[in-house]
Length: 132
Image (cartoon, rainbow, N blue to C red; front, side):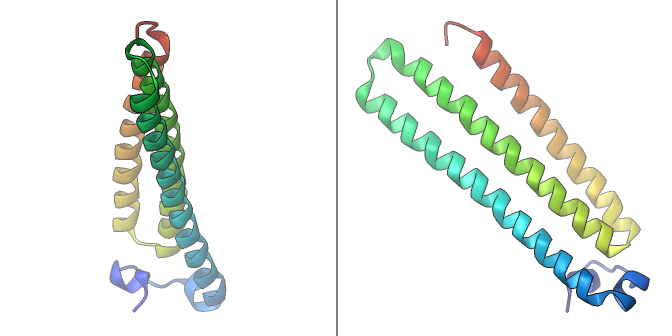
């Protein structure tokens, strides 16, 4: 059973006449999902490495500054991963042709946009505060 049937979508001309293209685009969307996960995992690994390094090697006054720099970097990776997930969701929605999927996409984009907004704002605050 494919994703389209799972979500209750209806098959249109795209699925009937261009099944190979639809299948290839589903693989592309899955690859984009995996890339988004990889970006976030790389960001997490870099953050943890920098955090541990700051805890072990830094003096007290520099430690908070280094950790906040690492938090900013982690935020960048999270934002990049979220943007990739949105690309994947757009591909899935374009292929499904279902109104429910379009509503689901709108909710996902709204939630991810809100997360991105607040994360970006926090990153800016960390950068602008010289005490951090």
